[in-house]
Image (cartoon, rainbow, N blue to C red; front, side):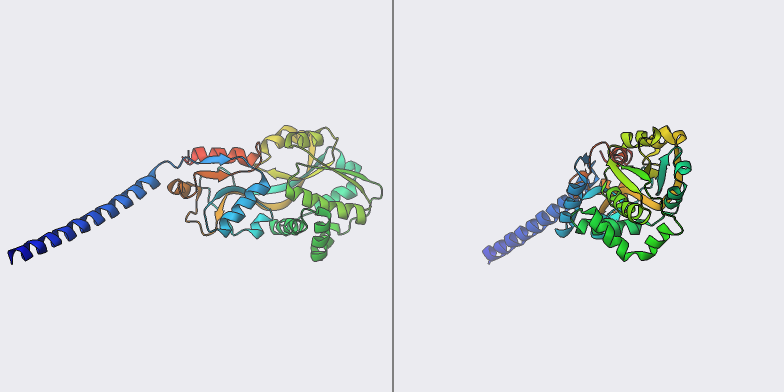
Length: 305
């Protein structure tokens, strides 16, 4: 009888010990998880390319994982990917941007009708998102994509060309910095300028400093993708007295950090709590771009290092 009682007590004690051990393990797990989450995340900005960044975000979303990346709008990725922009309470990326048409000094006097065309060239970020997405569907054949977009948007086409007289033989030299949106935009404008206004249009893609200097010294005529007041602030300030600004052709452009729409964060500062889950990285694009500089600043300012 005593042996049975002793065995019963022993069994009860073992169960109690096991329960205590399990509870202790659970408490330790949650304590470590909380401590791990509270540690500095050690984010780093990964230099990549725009296509590679988009491909990785697309893959991440298809797998239901987490990734933070640099991004901007307008761009076709905003229509294709299930993403959201993180709030930026410190305004590292600034307020929304406007996109301006800037021409060389004397362009309006030399080509008043074409200057009028560029002044009334106005559209929305959603318009360029759709244009670039169509071009993407044609594997980057910008002319085919631009023609389809014009066919699908007759009202915008008519607004761009309203009351503009053809200027046969007028030579227009357009310059850009080779971004997808710019190539798509210039392909669309080239169709209108050549086929409807009878101009002769050339296009050069180059770096940001060379593009702005080319406008300033008059070797190029037009750039329709000048982002202000932040992205091209420094470059534009250096040449603004030597060029003509024909006004904004688009309002509400933006840049910042994106994550999948299902991600448990809504602000850049929230990333600090999820360093492990995001792999401690922010996928970037090509080196030297303004958005890369601002992202490095955001990592510093929000204490993500």
